[in-house]
Length: 224
Ligand code: UTP
Image (tube, rainbow, N blue to C red; front, side, top):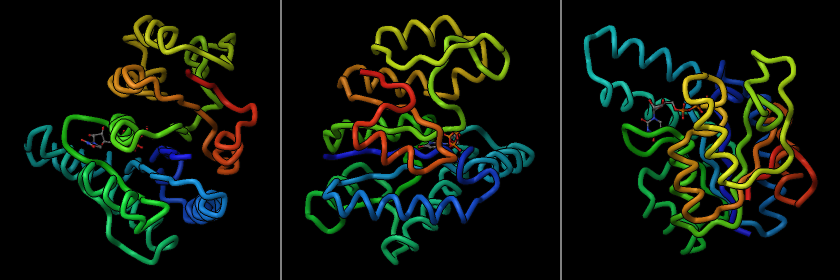
């Protein structure tokens, strides 16, 4: 299978967690041995947010803030890529990613952000579109998608399965509530919905959840 794995900066980079990064690299190796082709997309977490603030404090604009956040996400990606492939080369365009996979140069590609004005979720969705991925797994700081933000509502219930229509409705309802937004960026949902990319949201502090999701075990929230 072709799989895009999106690991939240909130999971591996807030602060940088080398133990967790090593565990993810082990999972990537296992996926390689199972003959899957994988693109892993990471975000810059709190380090990216710190840098966004520095750029803001310098009186610079949002695209400039995004640019440094992208650089930080690529720096985090380098940690994965060095440990996994012994390379610090991180693709910076969708074409690069597709070429790396199609030429069979790599079974696993690691990357960060792509361009200002989008989130890493949207990057993962665009990569999935470009490489015609069978599956996108998002490893985040919650067990899945809930009826409401579980950090604010005790009675929030985890949903095991959703359609893209359900998710769009849920995100719409929660428009002004932070938290739900973070779980999947609505811009990313639009792209995933258009391409009907099966998406699974799992708890990222246990990297083996990603393996379970790829292997079709019941885990997290499945959107299809
Ligand atoms: P994210 O919020 O997507 O990454 O990107 P994250 O750190 O993994 O966050 P969680 O774990 O999902 O919460 C951080 C910022 O980087 C910029 C944006 O400013 C975004 O808010 N960015 C990232 C871009 O501008 N373009 C990209 O392609 C990626």
